[in-house]
Structures are given as structure tokens and as C-alpha cells.
Length: 233
Image (cartoon, rainbow, N blue to C red; front, top):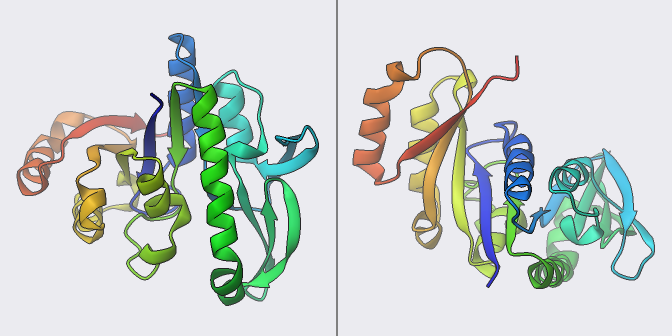
């Protein structure tokens, strides 16, 4: 049975892409069949890869790098829905590597989101047939309460993939414990129960200085801090 870990964040740019790539590389080196996955990505940075029909399509560059880290061939199933911003609240919608149109945000969610969700589920199912473990990357914050009913990369992925969740918080921004605590509090109840641990990213210095905060966070939420990711510098 395939297992799935969703690497989610308290915000954008907390290190999700890097952590997913690192986990893919380490697990692959340990002999585990692992693949990256991001249901919906918003980026103009893309790479050409193979589609399930052996054609060529586009995925976000992060999933391309993560696939290389996992030592697997990058495919469009690893990023089935790609939104490429064009300005004026409009994006090009790419599904399974193929551009299908240009839409404003409201039009996408009202008229095309269900199609995108079906594509994301189908891609996940194909990956799950081929691999023992899927490392999924969330998008932005998993606590965007205005988007919970249409959050494909976070809420929907956690639910249809029956995923455990690893929550990342960036200490460089300041207020990391407030960010982690607030995110946990605002997540849907069923997702809160899926969180197995938190990781503090972009950390410098002596981790012992955080001990009291880590203990208090666990006391308040029941969720442990399971690791740190050093700052890239």
C-alpha cells in the first residue's frame, strides 16, 4: 500500500520544495521507491517532461528537480495542474502538461477547478500504482481559511491521498511558534489530526535556545517539532 507524506507550510517560501527534494533523495538512496507530487503549482518556471501518453508536456521546475532527486523519470503526473501567471489576475491553465486556456482566478475556480481536481486525483493514482511512497508538496499556507473548500495542493491532496502531514515554519521571518500554532489552529479538524510533526526551517545557531518554545508548542497542540533545516547560507 502506497503511503503519502504532504509537506505543508505556514506560508510561501518556507522551504517546502527543498525539503521535498531532500526527502526524495534520502529515501531513494535508502532503496525506497519514491516520487514527488504537487497537485497544483503556480509558476512560470517549467520544464518539458513526458506525459502518460508518451507526448511532451510541462511541469513546475521544482517537481522536475524533485524527480531527479528521487532518481525517477519526471512526468506530468508529478504536477498535473500548473497555473502560469500572465498578469491582471489571469493565468494559463496547464493540465497534464497541456495548455487548455487562459482564465481569471474566478473563472478557473467556478468553471475549471473540478476538471483540475479530477486530473490531480488521476495522476496521484497512477503514481501510487508505481511507487511505495509519495512525497507531496503543498502550496502557500495550509491555513488559508478562505480557500479551504478549493485548496487542491493542500486540503484536497491530504484528503484524497490519505496523507500524513509535515508542517514547516520559517524562523527567519520571526514568530515561528506563533506561525506554527496559528496554522495548526486554523487547519480543518481532520487535517489537524494528520499532522505528525513540525520542522523549523532556515535556522541558525544553537537549537537548545528553542527548547522551551518547542515544549510549550507540544503542550498546547500535541504536535512535536521533529527537526530543523539549516539556512542555505
